[in-house]
Structure formats: structure tokens, C-alpha cells
Length: 274
Ligand code: ADP
Ligand code: MG
Image (cartoon, rainbow, N blue to C red; front, side, top):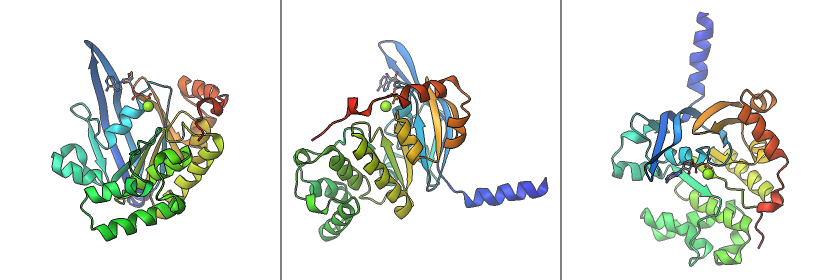
């Protein structure tokens, strides 16, 4: 028994927690209606892991992930800790500094259309007040990493969806975050491009030791990319664990329904091509 306890303590020292969410709830009020988008969620995400959050539309996935960088502030009592810093206890100036530690990408890329690829990646670096020469060096290095060196002078409208997402990834990594949040990042992409973005995220996870949180409604993405997953329904995490265990031995009805519904989805329905 004693040995078991010691082993657990040693393991906990080894496995560093990068994101610690404790009793996170988020309530909205819309026309006097109270909506509990996230309902008492607690999750630990380990340093360097790729963690999936799945569930049907409206389950609360985006709201939960936006609570990680405090784009949404959780209800009183919720605690968000990233890389050992409790974000929910910081003032706005401290929070702005800590947010650099968390990059985010979205389904529709959110690029600045009037700026070139290079200028999009330079933007966060300029905002941070980094010297011009260093900005260019950093941005061109990142664009090389995402395989876009030959597109730096193009505008977003001249790129395919996959290339746009690569720019968004390079921009999200500009300030060397330890965490990358991906909200449906492959949902607007065709199957081949989805595969390429999955491979890129795996490469970044390994090379940069990046902790990645992936929200998706696509079964293949979770299976190919994530080591652990949380399943959400009506704002709650109904189950979580290793991918293998959750999908082979689902404990909740929603996981079973999700697997059935998403394994038959035709991806081409939601694709966007250049
Ligand atoms: P998912 O990402 O799983 O589709 P969301 O987190 O976007 O779910 O939404 C969860 C619930 O919270 C939904 O009922 C949605 O309508 C509601 N919601 C999300 N954002 C807001 C908001 N800003 N104001 C009011 N309701 C919201
Ligand atoms: Mg969402």
C-alpha cells in the first residue's frame, strides 16, 4: 500500500499538469432565460498531451475552451490554472501577459484579409513590441515550419483553406505558447487537408512539446490525434479517459450516439475548396 502511494507520488511528479480546470461553470442570460453553457467541469490536461473535447452542437465545448484563456470568464468559484499560474486570480495586465502562453485557432481561420501571410504572423509580434528584425526572423521561421515559405507575400484570398489554417497556426505560435487551443480547426477542410493539418499538429506537439486541446465533432480527428478525450453533453463532462477505453467501452449513452452519428458523416458536405 505504502509502495503504491509512493509510486503514485513519483508518477505525479513526472506527469506535469499543464491545464487545471476546477469547478468551471458558465451561465448566460438571454431574454430572461438562463443558459448553463458549462456546468461544473473539472479537467486536468497533462503537459505535452493532445486532449480532445467532443460532443454534439451546443454541448458547451467552445465555451469551456474559451474559459481556458479567459475569453469567457467562468462563474464565481471556478478556477483555471495554466502552466502553474492561476489565471482566475490575475488582474487584467497580468492576464494579458499570461495569455501569450496560450495560442488559439478556429474553424474559419480568422485571418486579416487586408494583410499578407507574413503580416498576419508579424501582427502578434509587433503587438508584443518585439524588434523589427527579430519579428521577421521569427515569422519567417514559423512559416517555414508550417510549410508556407513560398506564400509569404500572398493575401489570404489567394490561399486554399488548408493554407489559411497553416497561417493561423503560425500566427498562434508566434509568441511561443505552451498551449494551443483548436476549436473545430479542421471542420471546414476536405479529408486530405484535414489529414495534413492533423499531421502538422502532431509534428508541432512533438517538436515544440506543445500541449494541444482539440475540440471537434469529427471522430477521425479525435482518434488520429488525441491520447485522451472528454465527452460533453448539456454543459457537463459525462465521461473522460484514454481514447481507446472511451470508444471501446463507452459508459455514457451520448458517447455511443456520438460514435454512431459521426462515423457515417460525409465530410465533403462541409468542405470548402479554393
Ligand atoms: P458547442 O461549442 O459545444 O457547440 P457552445 O459552447 O458554443 O457549444 O454553446 C453552449 C450553449 O451556450 C449553447 O446553448 C449556446 O447557445 C449557449 N451560448 C454560447 N455562447 C453564448 C453567449 N455568448 N450568450 C448566450 N448563450 C450562449
Ligand atoms: Mg463550438
